[in-house]
Length: 139
Image (cartoon, rainbow, N blue to C red; front, side, top):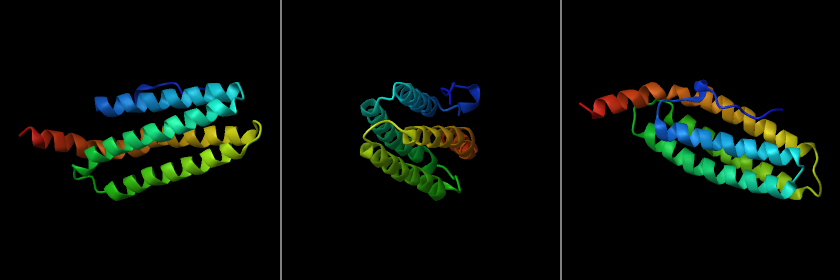
């Protein structure tokens, strides 16, 4: 496993969203650093930070696409909710650990896979609708 390198392919073209995506990647990379140290206390702190920041980010992202004609609004929102539930479950698993084990690696794998796919694929689905909405509002 390696750090997640920020790539141009992560960009949405919406500065607020891009800034938040960068912050999520930074938090996840901090989680990776704590894994390397096998530091359960700080792993838990970074998971909590990721969970809290993701909630704020999802609210803002949802505000944007709920104002648009994006047809998958509710399923996208549900994906966000499922992520928050899953992160809470994973946090519970980390809390139960007495010492570092492969659970932390599994948590990182889920978080990194989900985040990269969500940014690069799922979030790109609403972009045309947001762009159209911004264009229409300038008329």
